Image (cartoon, rainbow, N blue to C red):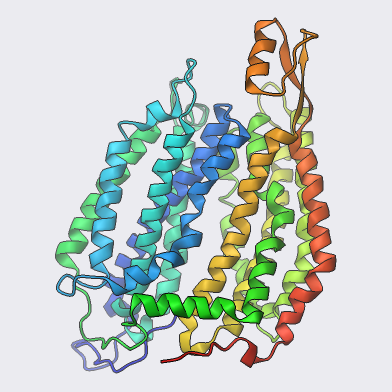
Length: 503
């Protein structure tokens, strides 16, 4: 996103010079805090599937919960509303930021009293997946709305010279927030991790529970929001441009006119199907490792050494995507990422074979870490290539709206296959009733009858392996048949991507 064009009077810096980063340090730190807060609900939502898996939730339940991750991909649907409707006296961005964060804080505090019941007591009562999904969907919806407001405010909160710091605050803040809500929470919630590394006397529970964590961050949200509402004023010196003050109806018309263009429509259809081949590896592998006995907090902690790699990779890959044909990098990386899907399936198959009484050997975690690193390299190669292509073809006159639309479609192209992949694991799995000949395990009711008859359901064919092979076949089919057509979009002239608008 670029700073809006238009005249601006430089703020009084006390020296008569241009504003510098140190003089706007307060605004930069505020943006960083707001993005950290935004990452907390994202991290907590990412930790829930691992908790559900440790409580033996079905993959159908996991598929239903995966809808929680959709709001950030769909925020374009209500972003024009956030931009256009506000209380002028209170501030364009604070009109949405303050109530959104208050609701998030209050909701988190209320949920701290309910979440233990929703997760199940482990004594016959399982997790209430529907209630958890509705709750965390609302969390993510509010976090996505807060993201829209903060992204917009960043452009006016910082001077033109320092607006580049906004993207740094976004990436660093969200990553830090996700780390706190996911990695740190899962480590402190784990009794085994706390007993091994943080305690002298073993205890049956971790240092914190999800209830404690929600209450703490709910209080932080309320305090921070109150301080922002009372102490931080929005910059009124910036003259809103015609693009910024455009009506809601006009914005939706513009989005519709963009997506109707043949080149854009082709791109959307192709990118919505391009990631089908990765869905089993990306959505199911981590849950399968937990099912096979890998502690969820250990999986979360493996993300820590990946942080430097995730910072360095975009810088390296951008050298190859900065030219006129960024999609070549996407096309070249795709078969490697597809083959890693088979490697992940082998990793899941190998996991129970190396497990011993004390857990897993160090070399096992080294193999998992290397596999994850290779996956990140291929993933970022494709991600940076798509971002570069979207930036290259976006009409500069309406760059923000145009690029956001393309990025939204790209994100959806990863979300829907993940949900479908999770949902298909159970139907593709074949189980037999061992110990009771006439019983089957095809349904939940049949499995209960098998247990009552003195038998037990044994998996003879895991749907994850079936799905992994199918996904790789579909992925290579896309690569051979549609990949060249996807690359040809780079050869379209600029006129193919320019939107014809009527003012």
